[in-house]
Image (cartoon, rainbow, N blue to C red; front, side, top):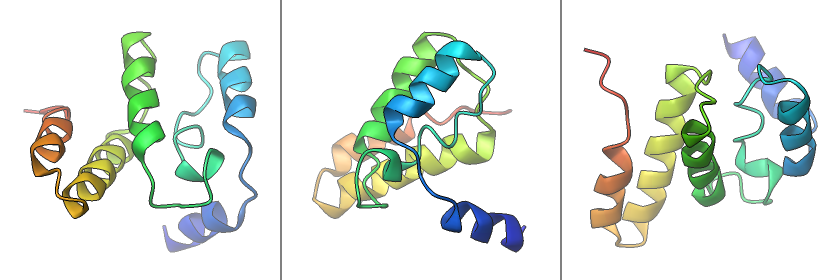
Length: 101
């Protein structure tokens, strides 16, 4: 698992437009590269757009993001909100984590 994580970090990041075009041409295109914050910003901890884009994609029935990646997007954005004192909004974001039970 560590090797695959290192490969993800070292791989060049494409622009978000590239990933959206790939998703448009192939509905089953992997979603986690699209939701990587590095596709839209140099700050790899900024999950604002990633979280909002994930909400839009879910509404459009793109649901093939792994549970691990879903949780990462939700918790990362919630941590970002909590760090700037917006804990109420962080709770709202965390309420979007699906209950697997």
